[in-house]
Image 1 (spheres, rainbow, N blue to C red):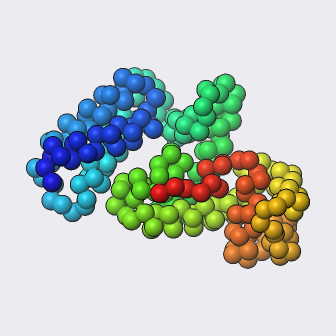
Image 2 (cartoon, rainbow, N blue to C red; image 1 turned 120 degrees about the vertical axis):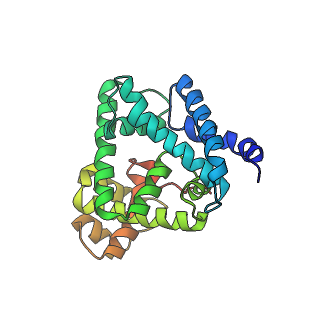
Length: 236
């Protein structure tokens, strides 16, 4: 494949990838330009050890990393996990939240990431975070040089582990045990998947086999109203 052909095909992909992660319009255009400049410089050394699309997306990921770690520092902005949390939270809201809401959202996401790293594998963490950023399975597969089925498997396993772990170790991130109990009651009176006696006891007592807790939490999670991106069906 020629560089021109790759650039034509990947431009809308790169523009969309950057747009999901950067709010400032001028910064978006600058980053996209840098990506294609870097792609042009590095293309002669590309040896085909990964798909060309993945090569281009990795350059885009590196450009974004430089943007957050270097460029924004020069603009006297605080660059830390807090900034990433702010960006992630705003992606999940159509309206800009007030200051108090922003602080609360950042704290929740920061706590979620901390707990996720305790219980999930590095690849599961990477996939879950990319899903949170709004990527599809196919986009994540291209970025990580994996197939979509493998990416989806990592997401589903990571999601199950995280939900069960939050119930036992950090129920506040689920809205608290009162919210969990209310979700169980809603599930029991609704038309959704029914909890078995074992699953209901596992949730209410916050203990049981890993398999039981994971199955139970997948049923209850849609009734909690928090971290909806963890429970919806993810498109390819």
